[in-house]
Length: 186
Image (cartoon, rainbow, N blue to C red; front, top):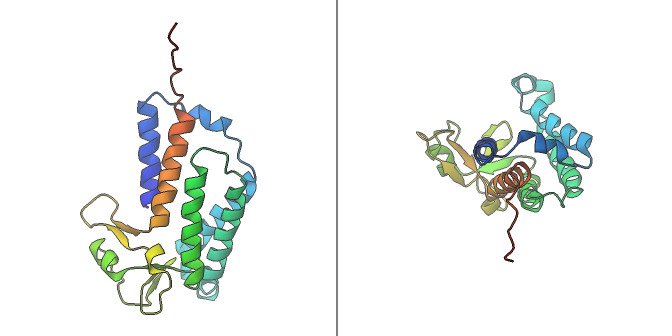
């Protein structure tokens, strides 16, 4: 949620700075269809419909890992786009944490409680997250930060999410807003 919030705010700031949404059409994403497929997989597995199906719910961590790897490979083809190296670094850090923890992103019980989330028992799973426990690997890459309850969009997030958000913000600002040309002294 923090990433979505950062992107929306970045669009608003870019428009206030005179940016134009039509400039997004100038972006030349390679493997566009593969990127869309990776995101659609995540939309599917985290939908209420999917989560309600007991026979498919057990596939969620495997499909999640597959979708992350699909996105890593596809976005690697786009590193020349402004902000993409930061975004890619964040995606890789999140992927490492998720793969190391069986297809789930562990979240600190303290961060979850601070964000007002109701699941805080070690090992408890909710969609793509699970509560950290003694067997959590690479805890420093996991969701250990929180936007506290009472703030807009309270949630937990990782350092990878921060990098993804920063990369997305930079991409939006760089693409939508054309920098004024430097005047040279004569």
